[in-house]
Length: 130
Image (cartoon, rainbow, N blue to C red; front, side, top):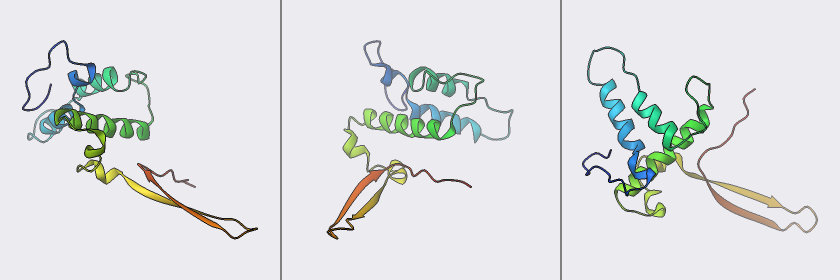
């Protein structure tokens, strides 16, 4: 399902049959629709497990960091596919640019005192919690 788009045909790939961005948007719309009974994200969860993370299991505790990374990647893929863009262009889209950054590594040789600096893209930083 895609918001504002025709329904996918059987010839479409699996990625086009599940739109993480659309499912997440639909779930948030249900949650914020007003006072009502609790909302279960079953359509989103089943679609996510079936199409994004088939190794995840219902009722089993999973890694929240891995879930967030997979969710952001799936939503970015859905967004770029719906706009027919390549990954380089969609990297600059909001909200995905909120999860991107750079890290600079500096190395200095103690014997010759030569230094090297490299800037690499990152999506997250692991921090030790003590």
